[in-house]
Length: 152
Length: 49
Image (cartoon, rainbow over all chains, first blue to last red; front, side, top):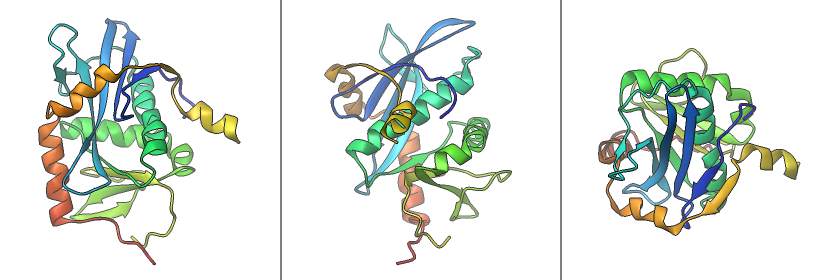
């Protein structure tokens, strides 16, 4: 990623990351969590704001901290650390709302050339996975280390 | 080449095992359920070999 990123604290498992967004609304703690699913090596990527008092996470709040590109770049950069530990992982990404999913699509689009050097990115559309293309609406995304032997 | 890759990763301030407690909290339940549903109904991208 060419965009600046925030430094992170990571869990021992390399499945949980925390960083602090700093912007016009102050400092906001963010958590990135790679959760297991029913299928081995298939993970969900979730991220949201951490309430420092309760420890709860809100993935629906619109932060408007003026640093969304840097936040998304930081979240995306955690993939490099996560996939070092889990090289065969497939990571499912979906927004908490359609607007949030669209934001992710824009984030991927803006960094696609860079991302595709290391990862295969797929978009879910019409109940099928397709190689990610710009200017296409997707319902969700799937990211994995580049293998370049897909036929979709 | 190694330096280039290192730049793609975020700077790691520290490793904190306390963060791993979130893994057992069943967070992002709806998204995980959606991921499982997509796995069940759509499956994975198809490999050519």
